[in-house]
Amino acid sequence: MNVLFLASAGGEAHRRTLAALVADAASRGDVRVLAPDAEGKAMRGSGVTIESWKPAGLFSVLRSIGALRRAVDYHAPDAVHAVGWTAAAVALGALPPPYVARTLVTLLDPIVDGEIPKQFIEKRLPELIQRAGAVTCAYATLADEVVERFGVAAERVHVIPPGVTPTHGEVLQRPPGRNGPIVGYLGRLGGDKTWEQAIDALTQVKMRYPEARVWFEWTGPSRNLVRAYARGRGVLHEVTFFDDLPPHEFFTGIDVAIVPRGRDALPYALLQALVDGVPIVATNFEGLADTLGPYPVGWLVPEGAEGIAAGVVDAWKSIASAWEGAQAQRHAAIAAFDPAAIAERYARLREQLALGSNEETRPPLAGGTPEG
Image 1 (cartoon, helix red, strand yellow):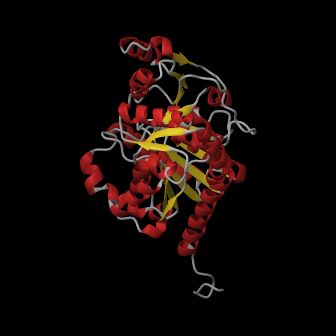
Image 2 (tube, helix red, strand yellow):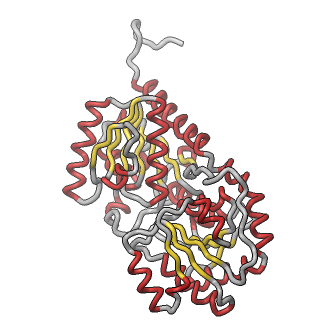
Image 3 (cartoon, one colour):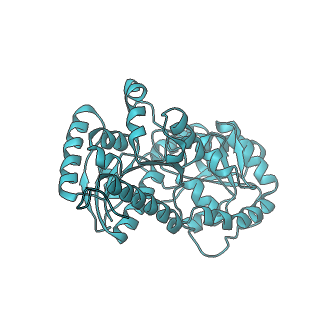
């Protein structure tokens, strides 16, 4: 198929999902991508044509609409795949009806405050989202919102989580003999400051287990800020940073992964920990709760550092059995988030939209009526 991808800006799971979708579509046919620079960077080396665009802000949106229309005229896609709210709004508002009918919208997070003007969300966005041929959501609560708040017919909304591959084929073994938990935080140290909850939770866990530590991976430009915060909380020496430690080595070095609620409603770290079989403590909220809830080994806790700390302490009390249970349930997680199966679901949806739209717009055969 000939597919045109449009992307908004997003977090780690957003970028990884976009890259995986583009790579799979490129293996099946011709692909062109319009994406913000950070998202385009995540797809470097894919061999597809990537054009920079920014579907946010009045001037940028006007330029984005022009770029979109030029891409459609040049590429003549069989299907359009819009990843993210703003990409979807631009596509559904600017494309001709035949292309709107074959547009697949993929949403991984709820609308972030300030991302789209409130008046537009209330008065214009529902009508636009209803035009989409189909909508996929990363978790059930988001799908419910699309149906209830934006009025999209339930049969056109599908729950498809991001795909994720285990970091190692072997069963992970946690090193024994510790007197306190090592907590692992995977995520970018960004503006939502969920890392503060990791530091604050550590200060509380240390009151009970003085040898408690926290490990940070995927650290970004905020490392010095994190160090300063940890110093102020009196736990600087209990915090360790890693630049490029292989994920399986990170997971075998920690006792429990923590995933506080942040900018990403379904952080990639949660999925990675599930398929690798690591005990998880996560905030009991939307995508985190929807995803971790079905698995018997996992701690969903109230929002904030106190909840995270309580979950870590509870997990540590039975850490050996927690690891056994997490390793046992990883097979179900691997099946649920299998990248190949998820890519196939997306491919089928795009094909159905393209075929359905072609049937609706196909001109009559000679004699005035279609045959067969």
